[in-house]
Length: 469
Image (cartoon, rainbow, N blue to C red):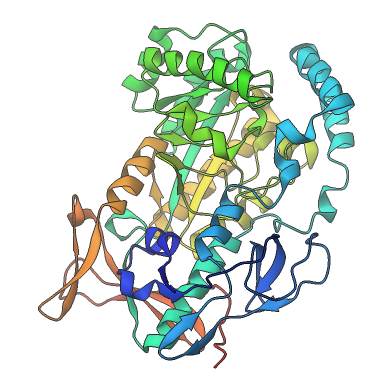
């Protein structure tokens, strides 16, 4: 049965004929882990092959094959991508499942006392809870690109099968190499009071950022405060309801609090959301009715709720655009890893820029009050300013990324008079690109906006592909 991979066309914005595969009519009743083409870790149902219940087990490779002019897949690609993005591969990622009995009681006590705990005690308790994070094999630390690799492999298979390079709409406006977003979750009164100075710091390096505010209990955000942030060209979003870690505890709690959160969003003119402590249920997020969400980490090894969406790109959950957190949080770096070096942030940034992805940072005003932590943030901003200047990085606000991802979704690549072109709203901001294989590896060529200027070849780096006949 011929099937268009909607996740592939959504990701690359390529014509449907390059995202059409033959999918199986019947899939296994159970889901499990396996490798696709021997390289990409996947989770889901398949037509055949051996699936493992645990990712730590040796995983068998399940491959595509080609005959009759078609690429035959042993799974539904949209299901596999959804399982990773929405963390269906790990039921223990769900707070409603994992925090039961004594775990729920301990969690409730901890978050009730957390505002009065010294940072040293919090660090000690969190290190105990996070013991063993280095042994987590999936998602890959510090960044997991399984979704990006899977979709890149499918596109590569299409190229092999058709013998043509694939036209698509470049990921970022005006041909930017990658995207950068700075965010600040404001957790306490001292952090709230530091926000004006933090805006000064960001401005000094030519950046604008978003501030996520807690509407209840932690402090009292005012419209004057919010309007001043907006007047200076920054952004305000909602950060949970009261930051107690219980928003996603159960559906009744969630739905009751969601109504209050929506009221605060209307009051403060906020279009974006991030949950407290990165607790989340991806399948419920769109019920909050925000334009975009920022609650899912790429690889949440150091978060209380582990898991991750396994992609360095934005994606849609219903009508909500998910802007994943793709770098380590400042608190985890400073207090869990006990490091003030930029090495990890640089490693993550280099990978994301090389893969033309979305680099999002979370720096709490509450945690850079001391000089050592503030100096680390200043060094990070200086580094990011250099990357922006040297690599053509798009430094944007979350709202701008949301707007672009939505308008890009309404564009399409069409053939006119033997040439490919982009049609749709704001198509003047988009750039046509081509995907092709170089020595078995996917590479991108970005067409210049000026037809008289040369095209630009860009590195990508998903796994090599080998098509079985």
